[in-house]
Length: 80
Image (cartoon, rainbow, N blue to C red):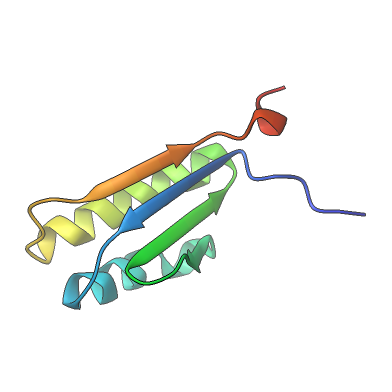
């Protein structure tokens, strides 16, 4: 049986030491995937992605990031 599509996907563009801090902050969520050079993807149930995104943004700010690009996508299939 195929897996259900993610309810929400968040793509963060972040590099350097801040990336390591963000990865550490979201590691326990098990939602993080490598999205390519400098891109971290969080995908899964909406509430879990939003909680992980909150942790990611907090970690990025604590690591000194002053600008962060985030793209959110809610696939049509998951909106009902």
